[in-house]
Structure formats: C-alpha cells, structure tokens
Image (cartoon, rainbow, N blue to C red):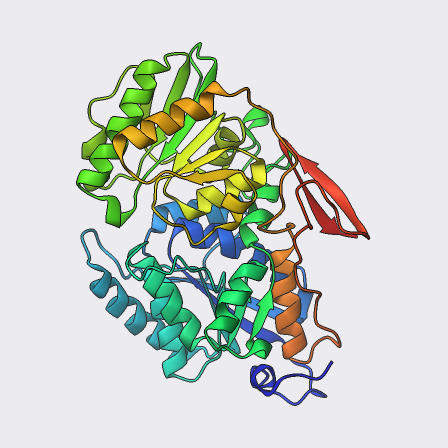
Length: 429
C-alpha cells in the first residue's frame, strides 16, 4: 500500500533508517487518562522501537493520576498548571504555554491528544505552532451544534482542523471528517479506546497498578451497597450547558422518579462543582448522592445497574459496551451509534419528560442482550500504535481498520468472541 503524502510527512527519518518512535501523550483529565492508557500500554508492549512519554497538564490531577495508577502507569512530567476557578480561556493559555516549554526541551515525533477537553485543544495548538505532528485520538465526533456540548463540540472541531492524523473511533466519525473535506489519507478508523479500558477494568485481578485487595479488585474499595433495594439506577450529570435551571430540572426528575419507584436505589456520583451539587441537595431517601466513584468502582457499579441516566458521552459509550439501557440528558449527542443500536434514548432535561422516561424504562422486564459492538472491539490502542509505527517506517503494513459488526449479535467471519460480565464483543484472531 502506497502512503499518502500527508501520511508520509509524519516520518522524520527515511524508511531504511530505524530509530525509536517518540510519542508524547498530553492529558489532564480522568476521561483522557481512561482513553489514552490503552495507547500507552500498547506502546509499552512494542519494546524498544516505541517510546511513549506521558505529560500532564494537571487539569484534574487527582482523578487522572488515580486512573493511570490503576493501569500501572505514571506521568513522566506534570506541568501542574491549573488551580480552582479557572475559566476555559485561562486553562487554554496555561496549557499552551506549559507544553510549548516542554516541546522546546524534548521534541517528540508525534503529540497525541484525546477527545475534546480544553487541555487537548491547547496541546494540539502548541504542537502545531512548533511543527510537531499532531494525532487526534477520538476524532470526528459531531453533535452538529457548536454550543452543545459546550465547549467540547468546538474544541473537537478545532483539534481536527490542526491534526495531521485523525483516529476516528467509528465509521460514522470517519464519514463526518471526510464530509468536512479532510483528506482520506489522514483519517483511520480504530474503534474507541474506551472499549480497551473497559475490557481491562473488568478482568479479574485488575487494577494492575495497586496492591492486591482480594474481592475488591486491589483497590480496597467496595461497590456501594443496595441496602435492600431490588435494583439500581445510576445517575451522572455535569454538563456546563445544563448548569442552573436545566440541572435543577434533572434533579427534580430524579427525585420524582425515585419517589414513585421506592424499590430502586438511585445512585448519583456527582461532580464536586457547586453548580452541580446545589441542585441535588433535597432528595428522597432512596437517592444516594456521593462524590465521584473511582474508575474501577464506577465501571462495576455501571455493569450491575438496571439503567443509566447521564449527560456524559464516555459513560454512554461504556453503558453501550455493557448493554446497560441509557437515557441521555441532552437534546442531541455526538454518539448516535448508541441510539441506532437501540441501547440509548435522548430525553433532554425537561423534568416531566425525564421522570416519565425513567419510569417507563424500569417498568419493562430487563433483558441483557449481546453488546452491539458499535464503539469498538477492544484493540483500538493496538491499532493506533501500529498505524504510527507503520507511518514511521517501523513495520511494513498498516493495521486493518475497525469495522463494527453488521448487526447486533453478528460476528464478522474470522473473529472470535471474548466475554466479560454482562457484555460480549468481537476481537480479531
């Protein structure tokens, strides 16, 4: 396969010369840690021909470092740029300046950023300004509303505009990029690395980076108890565009549904931001409001839940992998694959609509289906690193792109099935 010129430019060294591929993974939040950890681990498995350096902006340091520790990883450099109360503009300026200084000292072959955070946009622009190629992990997601989610939708579009290579998680994301005029040679469909992370987190004996803690999986943390309830509804809400009246409506809807469904526990691990917490101050007894759960605990609670009610894109992806029915507290989503697979519904933030949707979802007998596999097959991290090794001349052939199954429960020929609690996905033999 001939390389497109836009791909060949990633390699700084003529193909006959072999030297390690130097990657800088720039991250600052828990979601970025979850989704970049599989890339870092895949790079580690390559031995000496790939070196991955993790640099943290420090946007959400405690939650990010906890996730990395669970995966047996640590940051190589923490820029420690942020403090409480910063605006997105202040975050942007601090991250760009910090990474610019880092790139002046150590110049990698590629800077990888993930998703749609302000840190990710800052990292992409800082690398672009000094001429270091940018790779965007999870490129091409679109809600087609510049202000929803805010500021994430615009962050992602801007990152895609400056990136040299765009790792689209799904064929739909790839089509979005091509429709915007991005050259096909710069786009490669990998699957979403959240599937890799989730698969690891549900393996016995994980987390790998902590000392063994028996049945708690090494963290010493146990899942929240059901306290005699027959089932659980997991609720997460944090979107900036929902602060104020929309968040009040979400909380009121949860309270109303919980009052009418006393057999269910409603567990709400909420962002500590006061703009979110103030809406959930007065709740029925069967609504448990907690601090954010550690990643390991969260995915196990999610896997055991009867319903997810959320405005989080990452939680929506994880629930789809786990076949947990999901109500999305937004008017539109950049992850419509979950809607098309029949595992999720958009319900907005209207209190009556949300309360009715919760009651309807829980009134139907629950039945776990085979996972639709629309978001990935658990090998996205390997695809990303293999593609970069190929572009750098370290391997003769690029990886095969991710192709989701033709339909729920359908496995393409030549693939085998791996199973974790409550979910199944196909991975290449």
